[in-house]
Amino acid sequence: MEKDKTLLELTDQKPDDNSGSRSGNRFGYQINWALKRLLELEELGRDYIIIMDYHEDVIMLDSSSNVENIDFYQIKSKRMDYWLLTQLTEGGEAANEDGTNKLSILGKLLKNSNRFSKARYFFFVTDTFFSPNIIKPGSRDGSILSLSSFKDTNQNTTKEAIRKQLKDVPDDVWDRVYFLQKQLSVENYRNELVGAITRFFEKKLPDVDIKASTFYDAVIGELDEKQSFEDPIKETDILTTRKSFKHDDFKRYLDGLINFESYDQKCDRIFSDIIPEISKKEMPLKRKMYFKDLLYNRIKADYHNYSNSELIQLKGIIKKLTSMVEFMEDEDATEWSAANKVLKEINKTYNNYMGYEDDYILALILLDYA
Image (tube, rainbow, N blue to C red):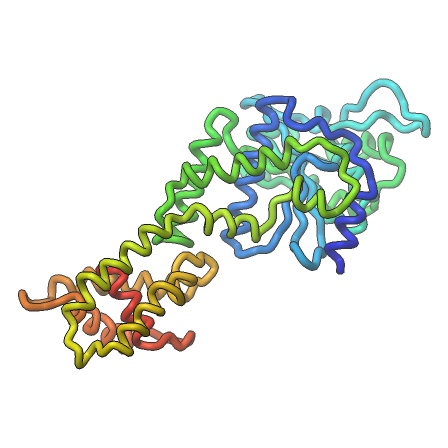
């Protein structure tokens, strides 16, 4: 499998530097930016493996099963001072044994271009901006800059400096280098990310019963543990368990942190308050047991699945209609009769291409009333 080949390639080569979390706040910024990128990938529905502080500050594999590309991220904070390209290309004064100069920030990043067969993009990530004096006028306002966004003299100087540091730079590497400016604030990244998680939940998981701050603390703690692991990595299993965070890990954290007790409480209320009010003709024992299985098992497994966009849409329609029908009902109305009215409205307009049965939709409606 391509994943195994790629992971083996990553473990076979020893990283040049693996300083762990001892550098304090700089590593806190790296971890938080990694979570920012992780949320972006989750919102796009992408698969991934993120590897912390191994060969580079952050590296991203584009799949957890069939890797096609690896992207490398060098992350530096500067606290509002402008960056110059020369600051990224300055190497040490002493030369290496092969005559090349010591590697600079950008040199270390681009060294990965000829070390790994799946290497794709190379990103320099920072909290501030590059000096507008070195950027072409039409490119100054973007958060993403390519090397071609800089003035020609600055591009040429950068290329010359890197070629003195690296003997074999692929000809096309310059088209795969990007600079992400004005990313997270160093002073306020926690609040920014809690806000981003809140928006993610509102868009993808509107019914979750978990605080964004709780989820933030849990995932940041896990990423910190991955980054801080400093033992030698000689096996791919150690790389994937001790230094990596995967798409499935994100889903596992959601499942573990979501308060399913509140969901069960809604189900309990349906069976203690709503179902007993329904006549035996409409709700015989067989149907009642079917509803119980729907609510406590089948729907529960689906209810917080943020990747099920169709179910999210249906729950949104239900929420809108239940609030409208509530005021249209007379004094003798019950939640069951209101739920059936909502179902009729849904069946008139909802394109049920997933084939949800009426009782499944009724159960969702009752959860909203509960």
